[in-house]
Figure 1 (cartoon, helix red, strand yellow):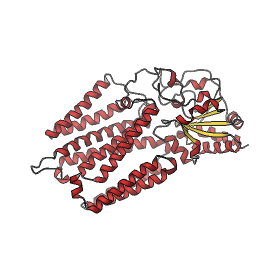
Figure 2: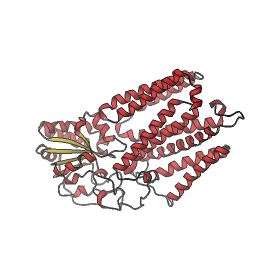
Figure 3: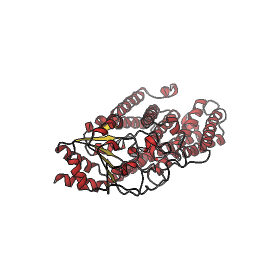
Figure 4: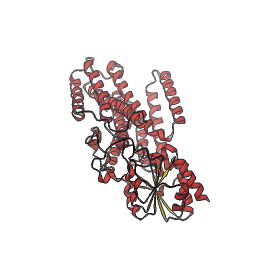
Length: 472
């Protein structure tokens, strides 16, 4: 940091400081739905200041840099226009992979041409501190890239969401991680190309090995964990590039992502170490057969039935899940809630911390449809209300409402707190068909309970039909 400060003009240090403060304010704003838009604005302004300052400091090759920004900005704009909310989780994973690869490429460039980065001593050798930074930055970046690619494939359905468990995976993972750390230590004393590229290759491999054993129920934790990794990779490269803004930003992203991962693990009754160790404790056959539900008798209902039951209820708790996101039913759901409230029905929304495919997925969708913030409750704040409510209206949520998480020790979701929808007087459960199971591959016994009515249809179409019947 002393070297960075010595080479950076005072005005630039002040600009980076302002950007850093704005990034902190951005994180604070994003902690609440009411202030999230302002938080985003702070983040954008901070990034604009940081990028502009860096461009002014390093005018060499400015046309090429501007061209690269224009190309990247155009691609980003095009993606933003085309992307659907249901694809946000895999988009986030994809962007994390780009951050990781950027860190690897910067590290490789610095290693191949250290003079250009100003990280050599009088003898022409890479500085000791820079060797540590390069080793860690490239390793974390490579892990972030390959891990994020696997997360992208799982979240987008191009790879099975079920855990892929290799024989002796924990021994292999520990051996590879120990090898990476050992080689980084050796790299400090011997910066031969074979050592550097072996660190890079092993890091790509361990990112892949760590993520493939993690099942669908834990994927939101993986997303926040990879977000943390991308931040630490950026921070390490900030030291290599002697850029204060990258160090600050990377540290903020890394620490906030780590804290979020820990909070989510705690909310799910998962061990943080177990998750990042790559599905530690998962069993290959846990939870029984995967891929289809067992044929059992169930009670089927219609939109007319659901409208009549909810219209005559005193309280309704709506539980959104990934099925709502897939069908884009959030706007129709908000309209349904408004009609019920007009009839004097108490309406609340219950959010599970890992509902959907990324942290806050359901909150984002409900906010998009202008559901009032004071009607949205987290699991720990509303779970006790199900025993007193008339109707639990579940729309496309399976794993987060599955009571097997409390009773079946062989289940892949065992130990995860779930929403106690089965305790409501009536459970209305929207599901496309009875032929499939949740993302974790486990059938839900709530489907077959006496107080459950299954509404088998596309979520959006079913809710829209319920809205029409409520309006009559």
